[in-house]
Amino acid sequence: DAGVIQSPRHEVTEMGQEVTLRCKPISGHNSLFWYRQTMMRGLELLIYFNNNVPIDDSGMPEDRFSAKMPNASFSTLKIQPSEPRDSAVYFCASSLLHGDTEAFFGQGTRLTVV
Amino acid sequence: AQKVTQAQTEISVVEKEDVTLDCVYETRDTTYYLFWYKQPPSGELVFLIRRNSFDEQNEISGRYSWNFQKSTSSFNFTITASQVVDSAVYFCALSDGDYKLSFGAGTTVTVRA
Image (cartoon, rainbow over all chains, first blue to last red; front, side):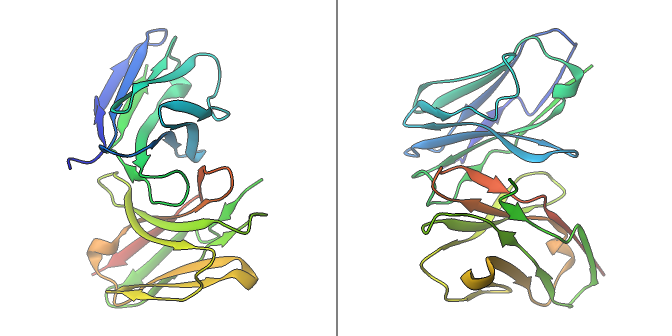
């Protein structure tokens, strides 16, 4: 398996623009997570899906952030409108079962909002 | 509330020295899972080890070993005979009843040649 695939790897956008990050989880995995990593706040869980259903989105910073998982092989994280403080590395991860198996991470998307 | 605490921010050692990373966790659940991840300079997060709350047996896997003690809520990780390639940020993580994987702040390990 190719592992968790994220795109794009790098994204530079202007403040106010819409940004869409994409993730393809490992085939057969039932759980999908979106994390954000910054120097100040470390690794923060944004949202967690199980069997394509959002289970916990309490980590989503505000209404500008939204995530979808239309099927088992694809998820998106959208920021609209983007702000400079959204600059971070965004990771997608998937696991076979929720909680009790290890999560495998994609290589991340480095987002820079100028 | 902080679920995972890694008190060591940075550790610097000379090659071949052993490195022990501390991790203290907090949970009210009786069933939970603990993990260690490595983030090398290239940025990806790599899974290293997993332990469940019912198995306190400590193990060794190559140069990695871990010490899980429920009595002190600790899950420490040791790299034996460190190498330059071990230089990375190491994260301890906990998954409990809410199934969310909560990470500690990470410990930066620098191994000097």
